[in-house]
Length: 247
Length: 268
Image (cartoon, rainbow over all chains, first blue to last red; front, side, top):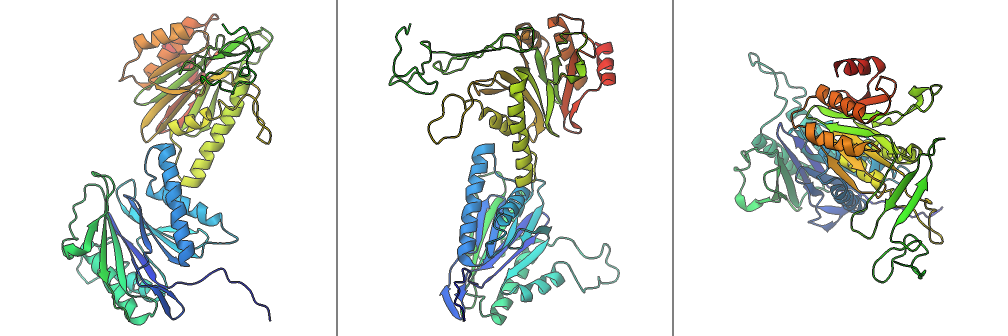
């Protein structure tokens, strides 16, 4: 028998992002666990990087926090060197290079990056812990990925759904914001019901393309919505906090 | 002025308590280089004490850059010193990246180091950020090298013995459109609409100031560049003793081949 130090922990929780035509929604629950214990009921997993980029991290919380810190540092250096905010696809590539740099002692973290591309479209990039990445329309990761992703495949990609006869154009490629928001909240309430590591609170970021009206946000209670945009007359970022069951 | 040697005139990078840099009893750092058999003297004088650095590249070959809304044109005079010299081996315009080009005047061998650094910087940027580097950023990267000369302190990386003896015109396109930058051995860089450097630069710059306008086409810029080179050149201009290049949004950096060059010369 040999004892060995295990440098990694799995801290539970789930993250999720969905891209719309001109917006992106990035969400995560706020529970942090270790085994059967809850370490805290409020540990953010979703972070605003710039006015057009929001990063969700899930897996080993310490690695996740350090990784976000380093990404933010690189974004500041880039701002100083190039006098502009890093575009979303550049952030995606940067995250790949940063993750792959740790190929043989990886950050034990699944990343989902959401935001607005330079062409104004909503985008979601998902990563594995060593940097493989892909642009997608939606992605769930973390403890309840197995519960949430099939639901999104069905509701966002319309997998296993036959378009109703007589409807021209078939299924839509992008859904409106209010619909996306309700799919996100439903995903998390359901994951909370079925997964012990998910719950406590839902923190949800909405990034709106430049010039887009906040239509779709008005259905939410104003007390829960907070604008965290950095510069005016560009993209806009909102945070929405909602309660999830705490049992 | 400074007839006696002080404690502060031994190194080029040691400041006196008054905040001045001395070397060799003057406040100037001067270097003299030779290029080729013809003893082309080249003085680089960095007058570091006056906020701005004056640089005299007295006898580099004339190099012209013109920015237009369509793209940037670079033109150089290739001094063919001997009829036995293969003029195609004189290379004074080079590619940095697909969207970036560079023309040089002065000690062109020194430009190798700078261009190599510019190319590596551009490739690293594309690798890390999946986007082309900005023209200003690559210019800044080149200028960061400029003042790494003098004496290195113990345990420090070895430094260059003298400053670069070359001025560059860096042309490129990015999200801010076509741009032209001028760098000199002091490490200063500035953006220009049109710029001439090298031995004939005074006359050439005056001509550019006269003829350049904001809505110039690329063809007009090519013709203007050649006309200016023709004015300041001793030999008769032909497709062998000048080189033209351009950077456009659609086709990136291109050096004009002999046929293309001949057609511009004919239209001139």
